[in-house]
Amino acid sequence: MFKVLILGARGNLGSQLIPVFKRDYEVIAWDRDEIDITDFKQLEKSVRAVEPDIIINAVAYNAVDKCEESETEQEKARQVNGEAVRKLAHIALELEALLVHYVSDYIFDGDNKEGYKEDAIPMPICKYGITKLLGEQAVLSLAEEGLKYYLIRSSKLFGPRGKSEAAKPSFFDIMLKLSKEKDEIDVVNAELSCFTYTPDLAVATLKLIEDMKPFGIYHITNTGPATWYEAAKEMFKIAGIDIKLNPVTPEQFPRPARRPRFAVLLNTKLEPLRSYQEALKEYLTKSDDRLQTIDHRR
Image 1 (cartoon, rainbow, N blue to C red):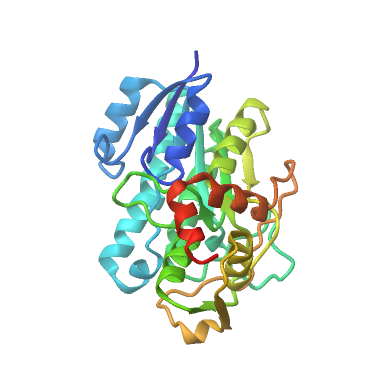
Image 2: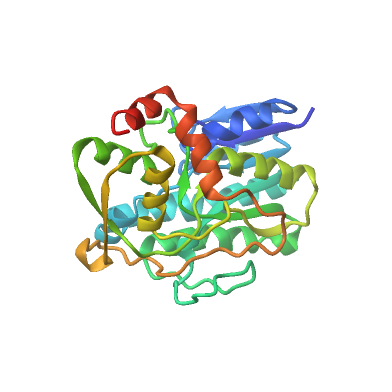
């Protein structure tokens, strides 16, 4: 039986990967309590002891604005998103293991309204995006040496919240919470990109591996690009919540880090996932807590 090491196991994505892979694989699941991936000596010793056939790295620093404001935070992001990935790539190469690593749409500048194919040239416009690109480049640098790898680019993740203290609520969770507190909500009508349901991303990751697709870069998101405002409008429509939404410009909610205006990840290699609306409907109806949140405004 193949042995799969999942890093970031109690995060939003990692917690969805575990049940998907446990069906047919031996899974070792580590989070920050078990491993500090920026302690490179510990990382190498621990991974070598396990000798996994597949390493899935779902660890990420994603405090986008903190990274922009603080050199200390930027260094944390560089270590987690860049240097730790470099170390994992070297370990995977030496163990002849497959490395799966996730990358953000924030590695692009967002100037292309048509979207970005897998071979598009990255050009990040914020410090967080730079650190994510460092991780991608670290993996690609070992490809010619024989590293087996899948770089999966995704965007705007949502789904069940992981049990890690660092797991953040999704955009939709925040919108639902605000709907309990306000009669109207201002939502930025910008940053066109694709939402991604973490259970779908986990299944797609497994399928990518089991289909033995060529090593390389893949774009995996749910279909249907949307701005934050458009997605919020769709969510409240699905949920049957009557609330006033006001589309506003990014300038009305200034943030330290620049975001790509258009960052649609075009999938030219794989079968498309279902629409984000269909995935969102599933997400909204699966949790009793969420149903209670929805019911109060019907």
